[in-house]
Image (cartoon, rainbow, N blue to C red; front, side, top):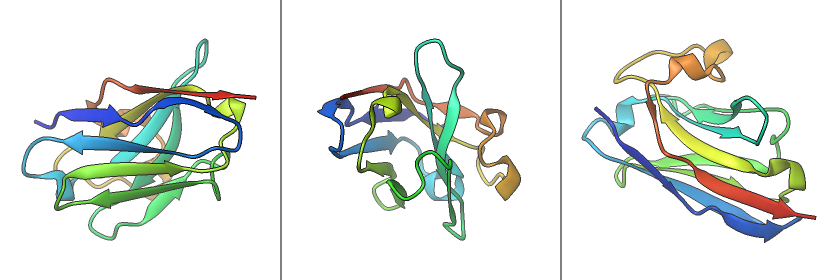
Length: 129
């Protein structure tokens, strides 16, 4: 069982940066595919970014590519999302997610929410214009 707790959200202006963190419980963090999703009011949850294991390859939605960077510190059991050049359309609740222990997720399915078994409670990011 993995518990995930996000932090780092807030209210910023367009062009600003934020770094989200996701602290994980348990001993198996390094053996989970980890991802970030977001959900804006009235919209469905959408994929933002993911990082694989054990190759640590990263994946991004087109809308954030070049602006967001996902990373993980396995020793600290923490996932990060560095968000630069924020836009008002980035406003959403951001969720951290983990696939099952040792699970393999193909690159084509990295953005599919059903591949992830564990979810955090979310952290609000609001970008004003």
